[in-house]
Length: 234
Image (cartoon, rainbow, N blue to C red; front, side, top):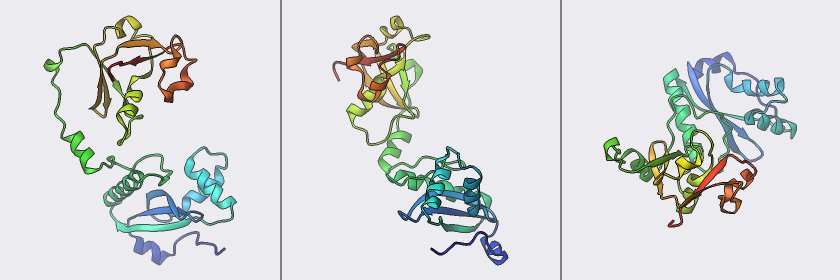
């Protein structure tokens, strides 16, 4: 297999300009697995980093090692160039968002990009940013708010959202069972947006009633401090 270049010529560096955005492609699948912003010979640096850190747990470096061990070369693509630093940051973030929005893309980036915003379909964008705010004086019930920022994803069914919100959660201090039993409604919240409202019929410790535990939390049945709720009217 033809070996790729290890650095740019001086003329190429001049044409790249101040900053550029690049992608790394796995030749075995022809899929991009990393998007970055750089200057100079930055696009080549990841392979050197992989060699120097053979035991790294970083997904990006592990992917590079797997490709090299299989006898292939990393395909490097210049996606945009001759950019200012701000332009490069914006382009990098937009590309990462676009790739991450498409399922099974498989980017190995640890972060979404500088000043990145999550990608939304138009309907979801309007739902989130067009939602009406709740004023404190409008709240008339004893509420319990559960944030599910890391667990929620757009397109979930009502049942999936219910299971994500209802458990299992640490039930010891400061939320002891006697306090939980006073809760009238549970709000599932994703990035300040209410995605589900439930009226808990019962709260239970996982160790006392493991049969009602949501399927995704079956591995937590041995954790004695975990609680969940059930809404019989759901």
